Image 1 (cartoon, rainbow, N blue to C red):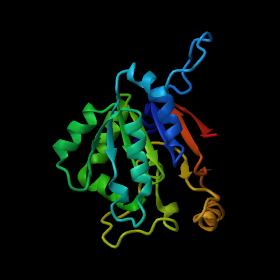
Image 2 (cartoon, helix red, strand yellow):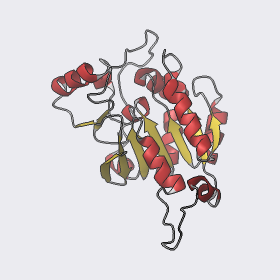
Image 3 (cartoon, one colour):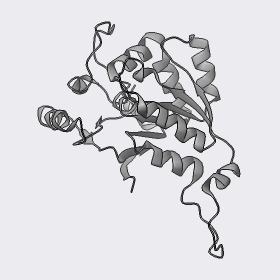
Image 4 (tube, rainbow, N blue to C red):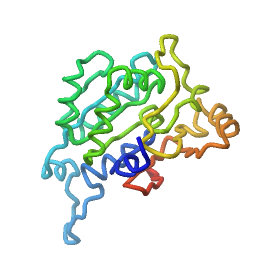
Length: 231
């Protein structure tokens, strides 16, 4: 997309585990602005009930070929705790019309972590990349965790040392979604990615890399972006 379409992408969050903090801020508004006269703060989940439940399109596709997928279960539990209405959909197997319908109905489109190349390949093969960009241009919120954040860059070639490119990768290039003009590097200095993230930082020093650890995320609002940290 052009720089104008990139700038028109409103509230996109990129990060690793800390994307949950932004979900909390958006859906539950934690900490809520409780009246000062309240002696015992109400349960945040009660506070959630008082707000309209968010519809979440939950995309686990990046994780499908990974050995460890505990982070996917953690995300499911989080959205359940927030009482979100979750529709889980694998873009590598679902019909285009189904994906389109789910995306249009959702308030939030969430991509789990996993293999960035497999996810980007499926987005492009199925045409889901175009659907996603259309929804973001209309103001929808996207949350990308790890691989889900990496794919937002102009290219994902820089992450190949962390994510092995699948043998059946069908694209002729390593283009990303080009939603942002920088490159998210998740799990920075975090086990088991400490050495590889240091290597990527050194070898791709010409790129505008945004390294974040597992307690940080990047919130993008229009042309502005900021790193947030979960205490």
